[in-house]
Length: 187
Image (tube, rainbow, N blue to C red):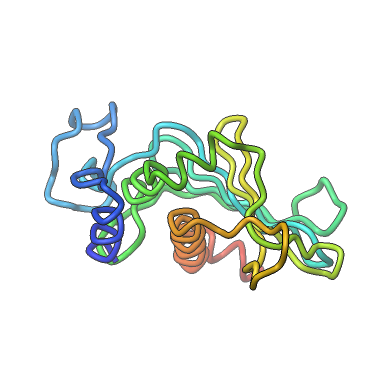
């Protein structure tokens, strides 16, 4: 997983931007990539993402400094979570790391999207039971819909934003399959 994102981010002009050092722990020195070490990187600001709209449950994940993953699922129109969990990212070996997420936010397409926020890329099909994928960092919100497929007035999804959506979705799937989040999702 890590090598794939290094290639993608390197082609976007981000050589060496794979991880952001944490202020906690051993001062940012690598400890060989062991689970939970600074070698896995950190996010400095909380990042929220999830699918919204349509008739399905609203699902929101958060990656908080340095590498705390949280998830909540709500019934449509409800303010009360049905399922929640929170856990630390334990390993970056073969899984999405906080450093990869931090690096993906440095991609020029993502930087531009956050600067233009609020912004919608792709087709908003919520009226037809479709969903939007929302990415939030600070006060900025970027909504990503379905591919434009040549529709007039539709703003195409930039490659860097599409890659971030894929990365965040993969992180969520990985975390919901392990630890306390797996237990919470099987109740």
